[in-house]
Image 1 (cartoon, rainbow, N blue to C red):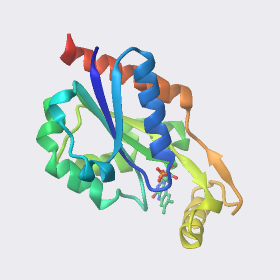
Image 2 (image 1 turned 90 degrees about the vertical axis):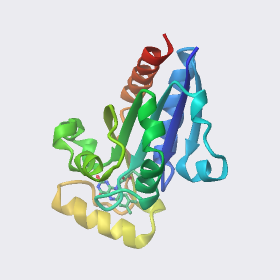
Image 3 (image 1 turned 90 degrees about the horizontal axis):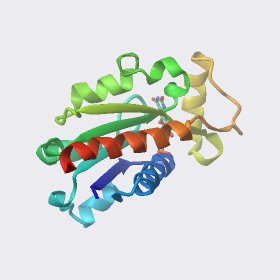
Image 4 (image 1 turned 120 degrees about the vertical axis):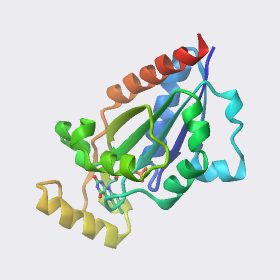
Length: 183
Ligand SMILES: Cc1cc2nc3c(=O)[nH]c(=O)nc-3n(C[C@H](O)[C@H](O)[C@H](O)COP(=O)(O)O)c2cc1C
């Protein structure tokens, strides 16, 4: 049985839900899995020797990622690279299927340019629009951006663009990735 670590940065909770769904699928496949936010990992240092694979996910905020994501991958680039590893990127531009292709997604490309860790595997997942729960200025800014890109602008809109079957398939993929190390 492989032991897999799913790490994430989430601001509003959606990337956390995606991480839980990935972990649930890994567990359903018969492997072990721990899920932890980057923030939690500061209080509970990771014992990397326990794990056979790692997936790290982060949501896109204003065209980039929270600085703690870059700090984390800078600090742990060697540990991440030592086992099969994958990066998943959550953003709403990916509501357009073409933007789920790594070469077409500028946020993924930005991560690869700025990150000290170069993941062996990448995945793009469409996130969630949730204007009512976002602070008013974020809601306003994103609605303005959406107006320019033909996206939803209704201030009451809550739209989950995540393809949850595809998230399960990604969980299966991570299970497979871990087998390389484990077998
Ligand atoms: C303040 C803010 C800025 C965002 N900026 C972008 C962006 O530049 N591009 C994009 O595609 N999605 C953007 N999004 C959408 C988020 O990536 C998406 O809502 C994601 O599901 C948020 O995940 P979380 O709930 O884990 O924080 C933004 C969302 C917020 C709240």
